Length: 180
Image 1 (cartoon, helix red, strand yellow):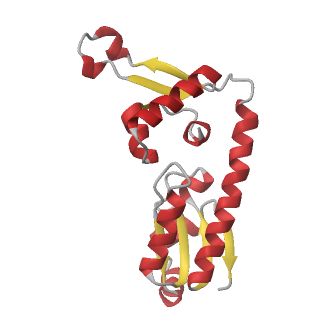
Image 2 (spheres, rainbow, N blue to C red):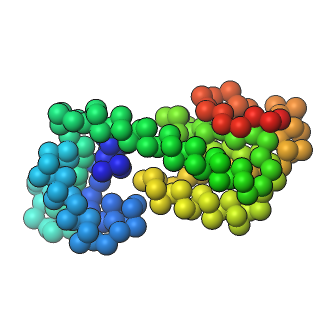
């Protein structure tokens, strides 16, 4: 449900959903049926599917029904849940190391052109960070691109107006920690 509410313009097919949410095919099909019956999603076929007779081209796609009476209410609720999850993520990462700067960028602020979704400046063991990020990814419907940078490197790159870092710092972002 979260995937459809967060990306209402996207169309997904069953196997893609199975991979994205790491669930069994039959479970996904059952939940799709429930969401269809409820009216929250719509089932569609691609243009090629209508013209084709081969089974492989007759894929059914699913998309959010933005006309569903509770669509905006559910979407708002899920956005609030995402905020709580993000706060928990920040707190958990902050407890695992020394964090000087933490910002949500990219996908978290609807800026898909930004090359990273999270910028973390600090000292934290890479394996601990990966573990926390992976756990968080299971709670949201997509993979997170993150950048971890030591404080000295951050200062140096900011001083020389590094293109990568500048693209992040000048774009929309939500700064959660700023101890720099």
